[in-house]
Length: 114
Image 1: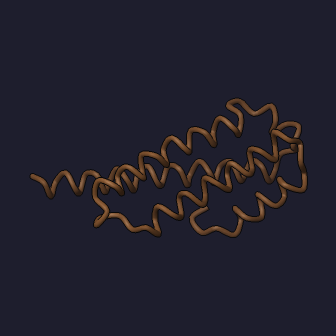
Image 2 (image 1 turned 30 degrees about the vertical axis):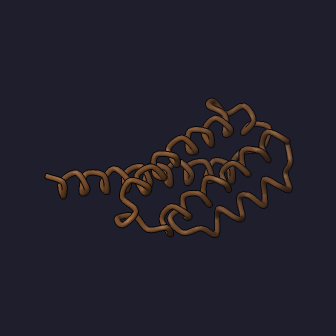
């Protein structure tokens, strides 16, 4: 029975991680193709989306703390890094900062899984 719970937790971890990366990929694609003034009008805002990603990141961290032997530090660090870059993207949009937006897009563009 315990093994079933572990496998279920691993599946949930992978599902949340995949959903996060999918949302980040969608945000990146939109940021590349849309003028900054239009990005600022996005509903929900990029800041709200980044906040949601932080919420999911906390769940990933909880999974890894409950069963550290089942989740790699690399997986958690990758998610933390991607969410940080997404927050950078959101801040650049909020601040109407084309240079920072370009840097955030370039940084996310280099990442695998996005």
